[in-house]
Length: 200
Length: 227
Image (cartoon, rainbow over all chains, first blue to last red):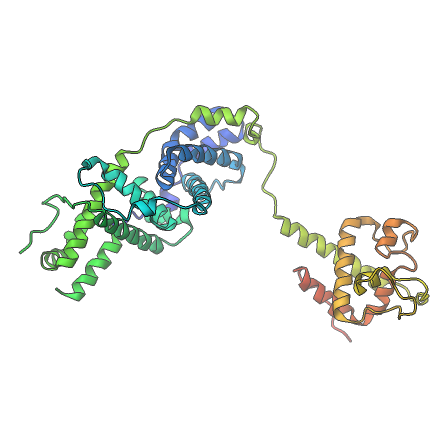
């Protein structure tokens, strides 16, 4: 599988989204409800993973939808709805992260120490989340949109406002830094034998 | 260890995050069997992929639908979309400012070009603009009555007049009642400074208009060629 390349105009615009937006603009609550139900998981996932804090993510998710609904008349119906909505979510997260940056963070301090070897394997997810919070914001957004939301590089580029090639570079750097972080934390690689070629 | 193969592996890892696809290439697979550094990197990335699987599973599910609808409809949020939208996206304030400035400059140009020759202002009448330019509230009646020939003062005066024109609107017409405080304040009237300014700056009209256009980022006004 290569980086998920998809053509924006052919794949992302769904007739359903445009129809739901029209319903919203015509004052139908059902349109609001359906749009929220359709995208709230995705928006919350991005916020939760970008912010690393459930309550903040809940607040930002709701704020994202409120902002989007209030600005629906500005949405260009010839463009896909999902990247437009996710751009709002990413920007709201960036704003909150910017506010947080003015306060001292404990994440970077804690991540310098090796992990407890007795911790169960399911904490691998927590270790990854901890590592994510040490990444610079562009890399983090890119990684989350690719791995968590399974978006293609072209679509991520549209959301982050950068070329597809830049997305690939950021994604690779994010992966390298996260892998390095896990190694420094003493997380032992336990890779499926069939994946790795045998050593001669 | 081959440096060429190391860089080839790195290029491939950057092209695709899918490790299965990477080792599907025989040359890279062979390289991984022989290069300890690349193999370590590969193992770390494979571990990362395992972590990603667990990380995705750990994301909680949520339902904010009712909360969002409630906030939209309970009046705490302006439910603009719940009434059919009438407010279309508007141009930015910058665009409006440029348009207003262009109109104001046009009005100024008309005023200056249509001002008839008049008697010079008696030196006993202080100029409002002199207070602006001199930075002093006191005006010496013995000073020359046209201290506006330096370019800086001209632009200050023009900007001042433009701002007044924007706010004054239709009142900015030569010949308005000079006793009207609003007109007196901006120097409009039979003996107002605006008329004097027009007469003084008449030889510089073309250059001044172009400079003003540049100053306010308006489109330059096409002038007929001078004979």
